[in-house]
Length: 316
Image (cartoon, rainbow, N blue to C red; front, side):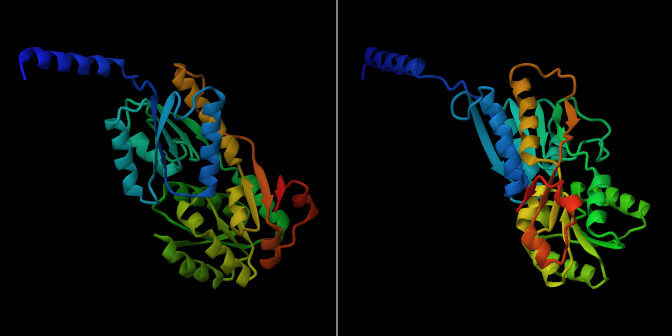
């Protein structure tokens, strides 16, 4: 092949390369701690906020969707992969993902949802690139609901994974509230879902009046197991995440996950539109839901007073 032909072929190749449409989609990295209907509800709310504001996956944004499948160590690896892929925004779903991003990411804006706030977890020097909406965890109202249902409440049992900062924090604030009201909190630690049956049975053997599950991804993964043991022993199960009542808890009281995701999504929208300097880059979600699972109440021996039933946002 002579030089003229080579030049001609290269010229044609360059022409067609130049004419190919470039991918101008904004890359967004998304990481979630595990597969769970509750986290998925917040995810749906968050991406609905983006869509409502004109940011549609596959059209003008490209979402790199990752799930850590409960592996805490994998979260950091996923975040580092986002950096190498030059994403313009990172979205985290769950407290462990938010904490890992606060420790790892410095240059890329990070929006978190379904997490406690950095200050709640003792992160004092909050990176300037962190934005999001957190759960204020209104333990006072949560315990009010428990006391309305069980006026003579004296002993509570909580199994939790103390390697999850969210679980450790929730147990700490609940214990403070229970102690203030003269209620004894009995705890059992777990490291995986496999530990939950034995840990729960040990709590039941200590003559507790109720079980509580609070902001714990490990416990929530196996909540049906916890609910089954609660039903077999006629011990009511209360959860601080309302949607978890659908898995067999008697009552769930806490914030609305769809709203949580949507409000976090609005922060992502502001950043994508170049308005990163917002008045409140980190703020609480103040609305709450109360969900009653009637079948679970019957099975766990809990009679719901009218005062609680009247406050319910949903009765299953």
